[in-house]
Length: 241
Length: 241
Image 1: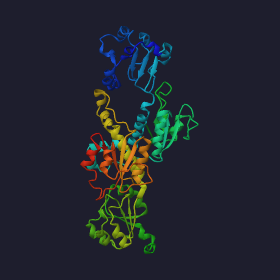
Image 2: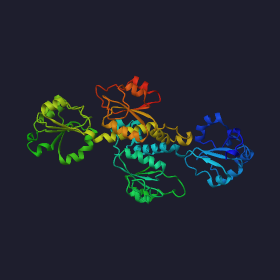
Image 3: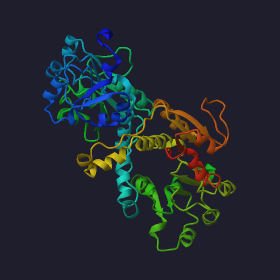
Image 4: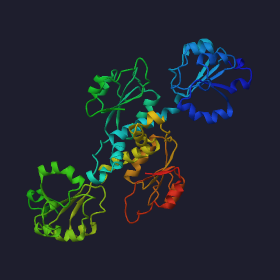
């Protein structure tokens, strides 16, 4: 595909459709190296704007919170050769249409995996050890008048169920082991190379867990997977992060 | 020493000097099994109260937030044989005087070690990933009007200095390793069996760390050990938990 790109200049023009928070972060560095074509700065409607630049746009910078890169948008950009997205997932990109048109797609892939796992474990600690709740208690000046805040829950020995044991789920499990938690999981398929107990059913996993950590993508298949039945199985003392 | 205790009844009377939050937690269960002698419920001054019960008190239940068990108190309780304290440390008990008088002392020892380590790592995650700060941001309804909260700091790769590598420090280190942090430490003496880099000086440790976690007891020796010089060495981006 490199042969299709005629000069370095072609790659210097980078189309961005919407100014999402990720784009705001990237803008200062990107604008030093690239000629950013910002659709939101144009008074033209998006379709008309894309048609105007149809021939020059070879690179599109996207993010999962921006507009989806649909077949319709791809059709308006016949010279497009490369989409870079700041997200790990590619649900917002019509990959079938990209393949058909020979458009290469690059995502952030695993770059956020460890940070997401850190955050998930941070939130579990926050809920179980009541960190932000007791922080509010102190800031509201209740410590002096109402005494010590209620104790939190022990982390060690807790049964934590991970829903979706992909890259992020595995990093969460690794961290939880260091805290002495016992990990089980639900996933599309059992992973025979791992020793964690597998539950083919989210409800059964919840019934055998003190807390659930959801590490799967939000798709049509996973939408509403954590429902009333799963939360009831988890019990009133349980928590889902 | 068992020969000094004449009957089971002697051990059923348990003296408590102050109603601390720990005692409040223990009271319901303890009062089922023991006859709790509560000094704070008496109208008498403490010394007079202790003199009144001098012969019957063989067991004292104490906590680190209660009054220190000084030589003076021990002198008023000549029949005392056993002190149980709810704390891990024994700084509030005059151990020399206890030994001289043949009073046995039991502490909670390592029972809180893992919980304290969980909390320390939870606080580090809270500060670096801005968990309670962003929780406040959302509760103050600023998300909708001011947009996404500022990003936190990556945990992986951070250099964390542990001041005091005892039981708690080791448990903190174990958890930090799972997050991909690089651990170094300062302690009274180097521990040759461990591979973590040792700094004999807290300031040098701080200068080579992104965050410090203090895991040593507060004693006359450690008081003010984390001073302006140490915080300056840590730098404006650093944090001490």
